[in-house]
Length: 188
Image (cartoon, rainbow, N blue to C red):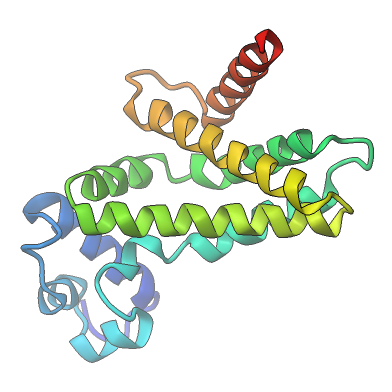
């Protein structure tokens, strides 16, 4: 591929994920990613700060989706119901990239440094939910608790979704996980 072809960022992301799956994250260099994408290392660094960021570049899109969905939730929605609406919105974004999500997760699972970075991303998503709930007038404690619980539900549902052998949608796993949470707390 020549340098003049469009979507350098997308080509770099695709090349990086392919190499991470084939060789492992630690055994893949920026030079190899750039070469596979038909680009230069300099072009790589124009799009990504480092090779980890290729795996986490979609975080801002998820934050936007979560914040927007909480803001658009019905006024009558409880904090957890507003978070549920947001999680289903995020599921819609991820559903379109299921195979990418599976491969990405396998790369993260194989590397402790990436697992730590994933936890930072999830904490950022929780902060986004907390802020969005506060903007709806939810008090700090309830907003933080609903956001943290929502992210825990999301993590659990996401893991089941990427590990499944069938074709069930992420939103289904989210709804089931929320129902399970509600059942557990009803017994308390």
